[in-house]
Image 1 (cartoon, rainbow, N blue to C red):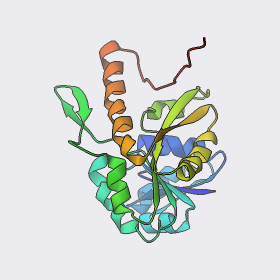
Image 2: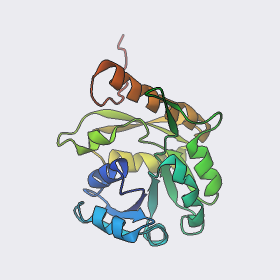
Image 3: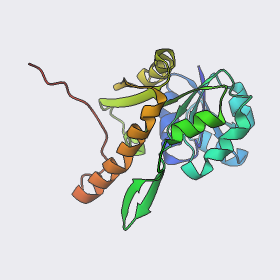
Length: 208
């Protein structure tokens, strides 16, 4: 599968690219093609391209752009038509040294779906730190996914499972993305307040 990562020059996008490139063709998309090619050169078998080319050539896409750049995805409506787009976008703001959720209502994933009305949008990977993708060992982590249909979830789950030790969990429709996204500033604040280093999520069932 060809997977385009928009915002692939950032830490989260490049980390995902490194893991996904082990089992997929990865295209790093950037508004600056030179930056995309430089980032792709650090990932085995990946290639870099401008947004339009990456969107046109991919089978599925991951939006890892900063929240302030979410409007840049609007220009890809036609190129991403009929394709799965996974949002990894977390709207956050810094206040007195701590992070808080950046929206009054709704979620970044729902905003992305509005900008890409012809695509199947899901949210996933929001609660995993980029540093986990840089570790040589595979850690068992859970990836909470919101999508408006189980079919879209299953598509996203296939990509998630292609990264060893990641387990996709269905959280319900895309409206649940605001709950998933709100967990991210909590995780980052917990790590900072407790000096734990990067944290992520794994749900452990209680056995009777």
